[in-house]
Image (cartoon, rainbow, N blue to C red; front, side):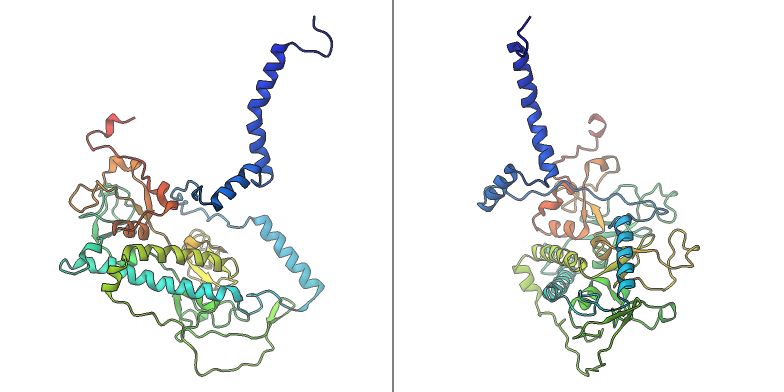
Length: 427
């Protein structure tokens, strides 16, 4: 019988081993509670500053499309939206007449985002020129840019797009008209640059502060333009074709209504910041058109995400309609789920970058499977071994651009698909 207060050496060593094994869990929990600011993270940050550790991206896969009868998930939780509405109602009750201080809700521009808006607009122009060079010139085999062109195929009955190869893939995923009779096989035809990237259209707002909504009667009177261009215009880009009101003084909020006491100064001359720099196809060839197009795509999406943090963009929860502005429009043209109960009006909610610039995911063609145009297309029985990527990324990679680090997991570059006669032998 051991002395009270003393334990055998065997028990002490066992407890010490258990404590040692639990220390990593305690450290992980401590990093989770404190937001990851631990000594190890500080060491990694110092090593990254010295160039010893490369930047790593988390695992990302293709987002699973939701069901047609389900609403899109909210970007901001509903509890947070309700709390913001209560705070706004309380502030309006305490001070019915007040000056809006924060831009852009007061009608003024955000100063540090004007340059970002110009960068996004310039990146969009470079992206369109690069897509026109890579896709449209592929139909002419005698062109000097034939080495940089990639064929694009689109289905005749559904929105499916395929990049590369002598024809489209054989994966049976067609859900268009008559798909059951064809056993869900696609009917391919040659695509264009519009099939690679999608820019949804929205209504142009001349005055986003005083008149942020378009009524149903103004459906054909207000022009429509790409939503990414409207976002750049509201953030500070001047386009002569789409005039907008620029203020020098903030607006007032009187009982929830926006009132502007600034006199209307009608400017006869509206500057135009959208003159693209002329570039020839030869210059694009010398500077790696695929790499430049991919860089423009990444810059446009990154800049648009920064603009959307300050400038509101809303989308319908049941369809693909997008509107740039603090509120959605009143045009009754929704054909999504339960549109009869809403009288055709949209169910507006906060939008994401994918709603503003549709990535249009396509199947990734490995280098030795249908990539050169003469091999066999992608097989339906091997679809679980294939990855996906946005059509722009796949197009630029086919043209010779390096694969971005954030899309490597999505494209499954570390997976080697088996041959067609070997797929039943693989577990």
